[in-house]
Amino acid sequence: MTESDIIKGIQAPGRFDATVASEVDARWLVQQALPHVVELPPAVAGQPYPAPPKGVKAWLQVHPPDTTPGSGSPNLPHIKDVDWTGGKKRRGGSWGHIYFPR
Image 1 (tube, rainbow, N blue to C red):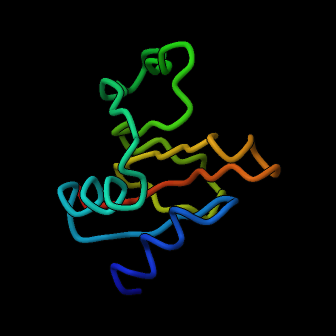
Image 2: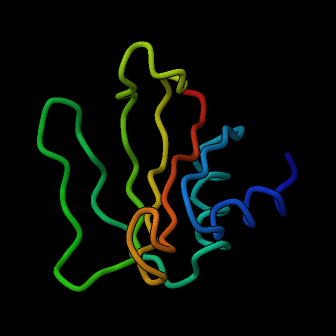
Image 3: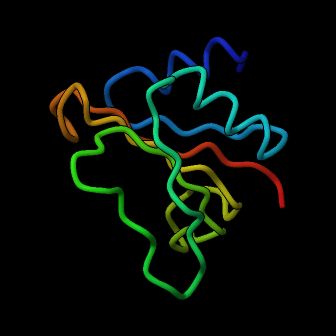
């Protein structure tokens, strides 16, 4: 997948997941796709993940490996991205995960 494919996938309504070479690459791709995104504090395994501030509809957050066994998703750290400016899940919003190696 090219950078352009990943950026378009992040911007498209619905869920989009991809794997890239590094956390730097993942963050850059999300920021290119969603320049209005707000970065939340990183999530910490075993603790509740910080929620976006009230009114924030587009955000990214670095997550530790937290894949549910059997889900088919890679068990890698990732950046979770959400953009509800076009609507919520299945109503125009976009969300997903950009995985990267540890």
